[in-house]
Length: 107
Image (cartoon, rainbow, N blue to C red; front, top):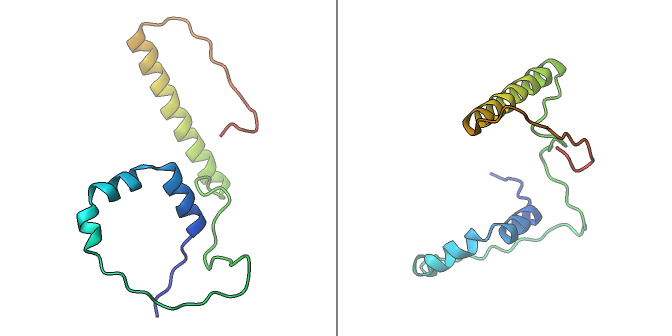
């Protein structure tokens, strides 16, 4: 038996946000019409919330190991600094004011 977790709610939200899926299906309608649909009867438990079988980290891109996290932060900082220096140099800007936000919506 092979099984997998599929977050249908997330897929649905992504398809609403990313409109290229609908554009692609219209563009390839002839090929899509050739697909064979096989209905498989399946019943879900009578639960409003069906937990996933896998664990999903709250912050998937932030390492939990402090040393690894510090290393990742230093790398991101250096990448941002090099990008800023390159942009300032290309624009021939000698003075700059940088605004830093620390609000709840900042990531």
